[in-house]
Length: 412
Image (cartoon, rainbow, N blue to C red; front, side, top):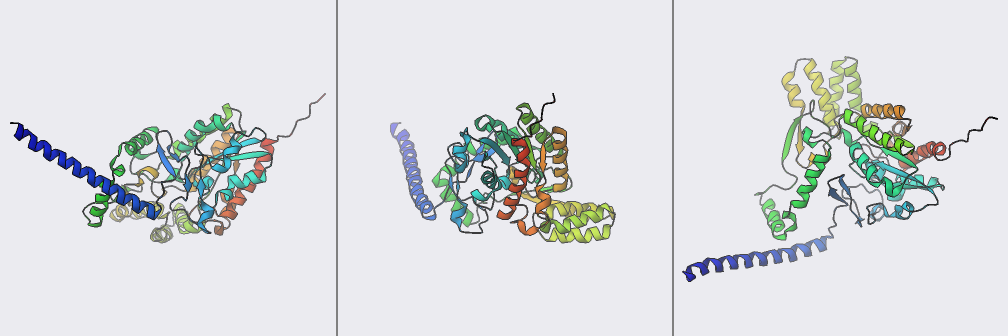
């Protein structure tokens, strides 16, 4: 009986020893490969409260970011709390007033060196104030409000600058994928509990199986949605509610608020806007021609062109073609950040203006100025260094009366 039990136990032990040996070998090989390739961790980390935030102590390049000059100029460095290292000393400086800038990649400074993003340019323009850049690429107004609440007491700003829109308008496949605390908690838990990528044996086998086409890569897999009915990460109604919450939060603390309105690059959306204008004027033939051009350009605004083209096709009775045109395929990894925008910047900017008027906030129309010269854009929506300097100059003008309000003379 003992011999019968010992044989399986010995086999099991040998199997475990073999797997451990393979794991050790895989770790050695993949670690060496990673060292040779100089692979760096992502600049962000997933969190249940914000979705993602800057990775503390990160120093390196942001993957996918456009570099017009030498890569060394685009190094990003964050401190222990995830603030830009250039802002660390200013957070605790009591000799100057503090300005907190919350926003998305336009505030973060995507595509320009850290020192050339408008918050840091604004910092240079104002010797009487320190500007803390809390912009995070990919953020929506939902995340912006949460970030404001989380970091307000630490920064204790005298003025808050806020700018969100582009990521709010990005398509997601279902209501469950719209920005919410439940969504971010689920995703943070999934990333925390997924141990597969921590096992080098699994990673080695995964690479082999992908090369042999026996396994799909992480970017494979897709979902199909209808552009006419698909939600965006933040709906127009929720966008208004988020901005109202930001405004009320600042009002309750008697901190002035400045909204910056950006616009998409008009050179990338010219045919889309022309098609929509024809559609509103009921010139359906001209609208269809312009929208087909916009769709076939296959840029970031092509899905929005599909949405409006499907409407034109429905109006002339081409129902089947309209359904096919409105069909969008979203990669599975788009669940978190969303796909291309499905709403115009005009719609969300008008909401921004309405909230600013209703809450006594200052609005800076930076987008209207930048849109006069498409060469000020790096791509679909991000300003270049000249554009950031223009934005900083516009905001600086608005800050004069907020940081130093005119004294009202007392009547005898």
